[in-house]
Image (tube, rainbow, N blue to C red; front, side, top):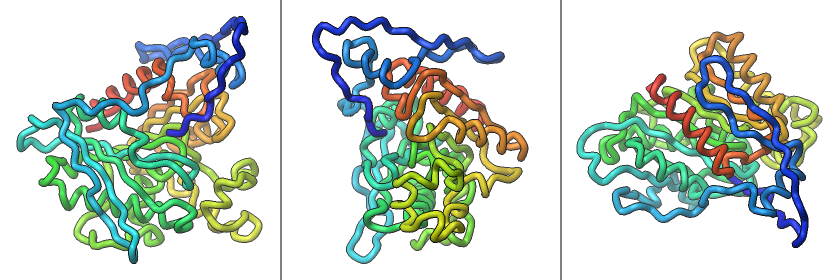
Length: 324
């Protein structure tokens, strides 16, 4: 998660917050929180205290045990690590596991960015893990996909150590992390993404994927013209169009994929909501179980809002109960 809405309103500004009205879809008992007409209105709301954000660096409760800096892959002198969280009194019972992949346009971010979710879901009885991967300034695509692929397999191999049920693993991420979650969840067995680590005894198959505002198709005119994909791929679309297809989850969608939960805001100026609209349509056409939450009036990284975060967790809980 990356906060890109820090802006303080000038003293004396009087703000009339006009929210976009949201009603629950059929079969949903919790409606999405009302959003904003545009990002400017949202920034004003934040500046005057009308928009509350989650605590991004909460204290780790005593009841949660943390296994930090576990190296899952070494490339020359570079070590890639992950962290695992679980309840101390978990005992010998194997638990379903959520593997969080951080965002940051494939070039920034760190695995601790998901600490609020890691703590919340460990408290709910899941094992949670968070993974570092090679950023684009270190290695270009497909390095990051291969790294996440390796991390999933490493966790399966070490499942007994952490009390993980390797048959009940979920990939979850926002923005670039959502993209990488889909890539491994949909295409982790593809030859291009084999993980370059000693994990041949297990696969990277997962039970489900949760995508928060991640890009799905980088071949669109809007996506391929942005600097982030160019930096991630090391080439423009005109130079290597095949890379833009290889890096796009849409081209791996087929029947039998893991159930997918999608959250996306309609005023997202980083990853257009049309990416999620299309994803839901392609999954439906392939017969893949999915649930799409299209939040009116919310931007990129919308789950930094307390209200949106609570809404997302409510439906993540429902989704996990159904598919794990």
